[in-house]
Image (tube, rainbow, N blue to C red; front, side, top):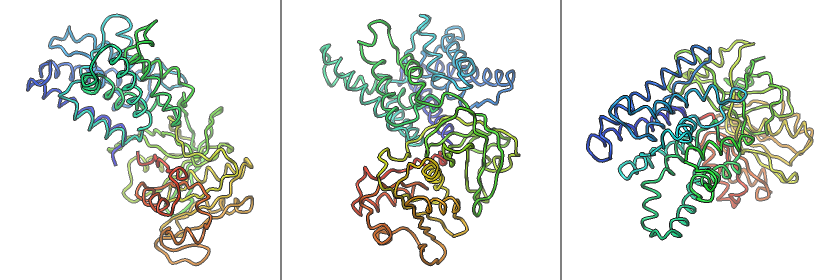
Length: 493
């Protein structure tokens, strides 16, 4: 129920408080007063500057993002008691916040703002970032809080790729220089910037490549630039500069623009389920099954904030962008605001991502299992197959509480007349007759309705509990894990 940005902000705030307490207790090299001075002043500068720029430019600002940037920089610069001696972090903070509005392309910033601020200050020779957060006292809370962040954003792929590549490079170079393995391992995990960079900067969503294989490349590239001595033959790469360079080099792997989407229609497509249709921006392309982050600033925002991740329900072959969601009585402020949006009004979308994609092998047989609003990526897949002619023998298990909650039935009926496509509606809270099924998807149902289930590639989309349960069921039936693709279900993030 807590939004991604709020989780990151909470984690960094807790780590900052623990740092200040450690300073007062004499557990780290800097005093509590020095840390408190640096923390309060840096946060204040970021908050005021971001608000002022937003006011002057008439741009809706995200203050949570500004506070996250300030907290990251707090851990990179040595704190000082006097105002004058804190100038490096203040300069880096000013550059970082300004970069969100200056270092942009098509209204999207090109690199991690905190990394830009620290890199500009270091490359200019004015100050070298210390990354003092990497110390034994903060190791356990850093790992615990960092893992919570990565669990929330579901970005283990680039994080693990980065940490693994960094450790291999660091270990190899340390051993070649004669450093013992115990000292090397201790230094890497307790006194090196790797973990903080991985948890709180590498995972920044706006600069993250869209696909998993691209994210592995991203993690590996940052690891190489920030750790390999050969990468610094011509130029010394600090961790923050390595991240900025990787962001820029891999800009083609992500949606490098913010989309301004105009609402053209909205309608109820099933009981309490609504579809919102937006005008498709010229030149925007995506793959069926991918998702966007949708930002809708509104008053009285609840704890989840003004941003949500939703799968694109439309196919790339269509001339519009479709978003579908289920409304509940005590829903979020975001959903209420979106539902109340007038025709012709606009919202902003960005961060195209997702690997819930159709297989490249065209003769692969498929089986889809959708739970509730988890039907949206399958609507995109099926409409794409209908329009493109690139079809797969497909069975859809559509799980709902009642028949009235089934959406897109018209699309699925048309699809069944065009290619080998079958819909099996599985209704949990009503008794239904053939060809539908009552209850939940079971092993017996799968064997009876899709006897060739071992030949099919299974796609699961819906609430995490449902996805986990059916993934386990399929594994028990002998379906290989490589033939089970699970949706991120980004709406929960």
